[in-house]
Image (cartoon, rainbow, N blue to C red; front, side, top):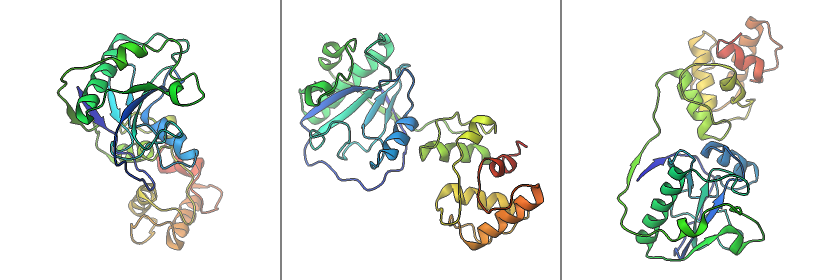
Length: 258
């Protein structure tokens, strides 16, 4: 069994003192990536993805929230549990065999690792139908046995556009393919930036502006006065509205799409 590390960025987290059970969920959506989960949960005001793992329909397993952190997946039951989300809407769908097998292996491994046998459905601890009437709960929850585990990083493609695509995914703004090819999906995943913004996406913009000859000073990831002035100069040169805000039209020019 291989676990893919997502390296998502979380706000402050607290950590469990014990692990007594596993709680199984469905995504309630046919297609739902780790990045989409993370973005939604950030929008909810949480620290980030509330589940510790996601099992996708192709059988791939992703680590979301750090395994030892308290989750945000089952109100009142987070302090001693690990949350596992299965991609899909299992009120109406039938789980693919490869996903079911991956889920069984993950459950068996976690049981052995933490010395627990208790596995619950989300509906057992909260007023919900999750993980759905067609979720194969008994089969997955009953899994046992020895499972060997490897971990891997997502396949990375190099290049400045790939760096931006990956950072937008990590921060939950998109769930796009990292292919170093700019396009409408890349553009849609780029957040609006303005004075006061901080982080790696701002740093990317600063590097790009400097490379294009619009000096914003130090590449420090802080959208300050110099960065705003450089954006305004770039916008003026590109014939855009000069407002110092990196919105869709400015992003399009930076990405070479227009």
